Image 1 (cartoon, rainbow, N blue to C red):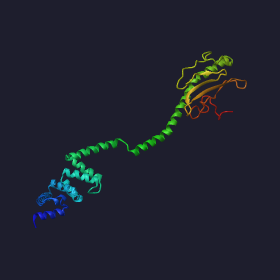
Image 2: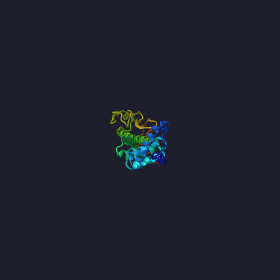
Image 3: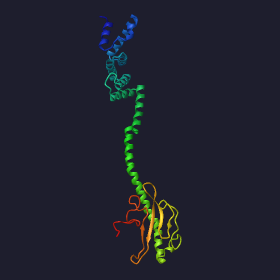
Image 4: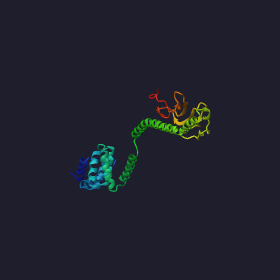
Length: 286
């Protein structure tokens, strides 16, 4: 048996089949091609990593993926960078083995560490994608965050709005205290004569101050002594809550001056609670 015949049989045992183009080539060309294959197989069998990598790629190109993968693994185990990069591609695509991203990344990283230019470029691309994923969110994560924010907003925003409104209602009462006190003093000094105490800027009654965030309208005193203003406290719809302080003049049965708050500022959720700022308190009423 000739050495060429033996090599052809050995190539078949290794999974290497003649390329289809050799079947149509001239006899001399076919013999030359087989001789080159024989030499390449001999080198690969002797442990030449370059030959092993070349044989592996030839087998892959010929559709013999399993045999090609085995030769590439032999070359890669001896440190051949190109064989490593090819194995990474095979494991990532699942062409000649089960798809295994971990193993593909292993071979790709090893090829890059040995200076394989394509593998290095692929590793840089992976790092860029990794950073983008690390610093970003997936669509599902964004949807979950948006849902949580929506739930919190639906609870927190109304509560914060109510808290702000109640704070401004309390501040409005404090700012209106000067009118309440001066009105009571004026009545005491003028024999409970309302006509003497309903004019702003006279008999100790202050002038209406400039609007503030707590008192948003001019202060007025009616002929009946009712002190009124619009406050910075608001309803849930945004309308300003009114401050309407109604005096009850002293009588024989009740010798002291009293005030009753009848404005919309008496609102437990957005303004004053019962008993605050002269708001009626059903618990203590007689």
